[in-house]
Image 1: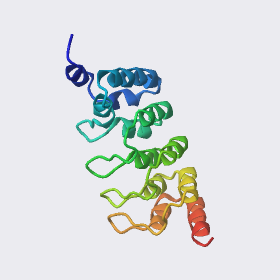
Image 2 (image 1 turned 135 degrees about the vertical axis):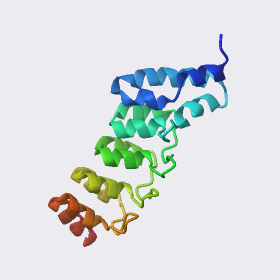
Image 3 (image 1 turned 180 degrees about the horizontal axis):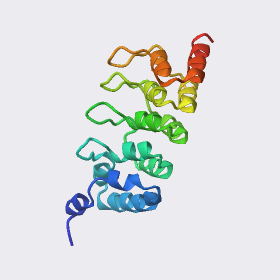
Length: 179
């Protein structure tokens, strides 16, 4: 039999499993197995916090892909909710970019920072606005997202909405700013 460390390295990052919604059960089995391998949880952390060659953790992959069950399994296993890649992008930003409302609510309920800025100057709100996800913009505003933000190129949130032609989003932002 292989050592626990050897088995973990053969599994590779859990982020690969998070690309498929039907793999939440497999992910759960792997995390339970990893927990049995050590009393201190190091094996579980090795799986949940491992990043692939592009910096994607399992949680960020699941959030971007819209796989709510995998997100829940990973958070329950102790995945770092605000863990980020080398560019500062978190699972909340990935879910915002993808327009995954239920995952945003789950991440926020687990303490995700609504206004965390990545290295391009983008917050989850900017990511959602840029991608034209009106419902996500509304959700983030209701959760207290800061509206006076600019990306690294100095473009304010309203500019991004105009760029995308999101007139409803512009109205929502203006209403939120004046209430």
